[in-house]
Image 1 (cartoon, helix red, strand yellow):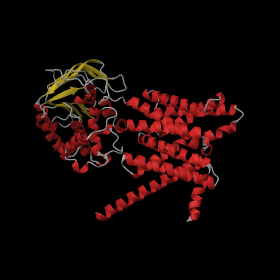
Image 2 (image 1 turned 30 degrees about the vertical axis):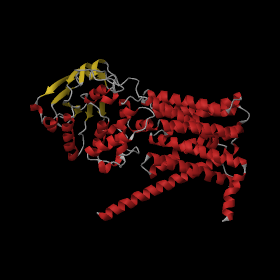
Image 3 (image 1 turned 90 degrees about the vertical axis):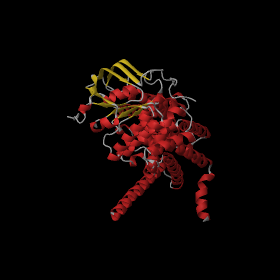
Image 4 (image 1 turned 60 degrees about the horizontal axis):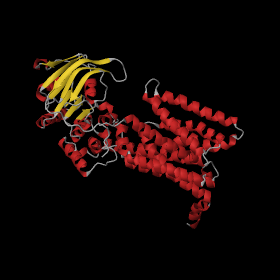
Length: 284
Length: 246
């Protein structure tokens, strides 16, 4: 017994692991909460695009000697507004417009990166570097998380309604496009804060996978948000242990644990449906 | 109180009709194609009107324009003497079922509760009274046993009744029903008929776009025939039973 407790406690005797734990919890909290909306409104692709388009912003901030988080934030906000603007008109299909811009922006980021000598510095932006979280990063992540959660809570009623019935929302005087902008902005904040943990390439996994797993397990929105948060935070913690003991990339480990949870949820749901069907057949 | 729209809750103009449409021209959503060309219509308060016509005749477009969901090209609309959208709580529009994401994780009870949101505005949470109103209309529509069901697990007729319950929860004066009887079971048809009678007693005005000509006489005061978005003419009782699909 003592061995197990020792095994569990040892990693968190280090300061960098404590910071990583707090970061993982905050990022899991914010990504899973907003991720439920992303999944229910079928915006998964937008989440992925947002994280990729942030890359050039981060690189430019680095080259100018500005704080990377500020570069990411500016790029994220611009992208969120840009996506909202593009999808407002129906000249190009939304997914096409996003596909074109996000690969272009990502390529621009890679190009800028390769033009600098210190190409290696950027690997932690691409794949995350949770073990290198500073206390300033933690403050930034905490502010982002708090802000997003407060706004989600304040506008929950309206975001929920516009997610399934835009007509009624418009009927009672709500501007559904403005609420969409709000959600895109919150999404940008969540993405920016999660880049430190899993990097731009895998950020959408934290947004989408826990929420998708939760959507298989319940039909209640609040339960869905709760389950998604539990899955995201436990994936983060398990991923941290994996990276500490097996010395593997923490970002990748976290994402893989998330994926594992998703498969468990999927398996549970499939078996449940199967059992339910058999029971019905037997009754008939 | 932070209302959703800056337009204030206006009182009805004394002596005005429930709905007066004059020479209305409107286009199909996201196109430039004309859907309504010079349509005029007068609906007195408390009347129950059926709006019939072929598919694509512009019934939905007319209802949506009156609801303030689509812009007016030319002409005018007055609802209790006010322009569309001047008073959001007074008008309820029942969309066709396909226009809602039924797989969204929300219960019937909560769906009906969203009818109260127009009275709440930003930041205000539904009160005990709002829940009571919702439960009351749910009971009235015979849905009490289903109120904790997720909305995709309801039958077509039950979904339609849920939408109607929401319109009632909103306590609207003018109800615009877009094909409420499309693909619903006999029980729901019967219930809708009874409900229209009840709404009549409460002096509510109801305009229903419908394909079902068999119930025109029993359920409505009068029927209007919309021909290719052009003209509206009263449908005489003799028309009952004519096949409009053909």
